[in-house]
Length: 168
Image (cartoon, rainbow, N blue to C red; front, side):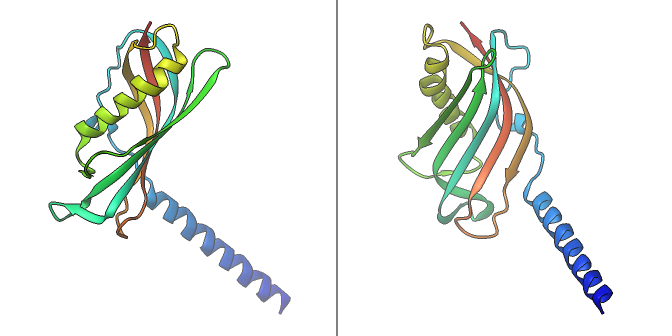
């Protein structure tokens, strides 16, 4: 009887682990982020690298063009942890609340919000002697997103490792 109970518990745990790991994989996917962001792999300058997370808050489940994969976004939040040199780590966040909702697939607008975030928040802090320094996104790797739009208003995010080239 004890053996059967142990076996059943083991099987239940195995099923739970398999189900959980497959659910986690389903919520993440590797995408071609260079279709969304302008990347300049040969950009010169001081290298700053780290992790960028973008959180999209949906506008009460509203859709653009009745497309369930193109919700209206009312707010974007940026979170970034960057490293310059050894060992300085920098962490920043920003809250973008546009004057009007925009479509998730409006990538040029999102890129502009991201560029503004780096130009007004990040670069002046990391490069105080050159607060208006030009910069380019040199690389984006390890891109992961949760674009499962199963529930109106569900959270959407994108996370990636980035490298900036800052021209001092």
